Length: 117
Image (cartoon, rainbow, N blue to C red; front, side):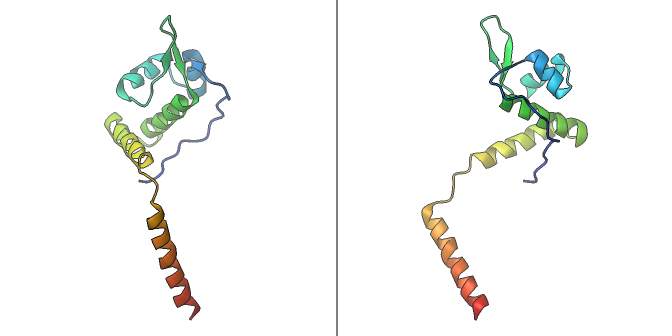
């Protein structure tokens, strides 16, 4: 899947952000963030006992990616959902087994020997 990275933003290094801080970092209105929460399950802020949202840095990174997909790349909401599902599917792939790695190493040795001859 092609990498569509949003422009880099300097997100402060802290555990949780209130919705006002997130609106300042992302340049999005609070109602947009609340709507996107209902559309994108990857945005999942914690809630305080009083119900206030607390976003993690990973939530903000996802929000910035969604903003980039929708506003800059002109994806539809459905298209952005599909893109995010593809990213999540790629993240869940298990690493190659030791046998697979050894097989690749052997094939590379054969290629190297062919090139050296």
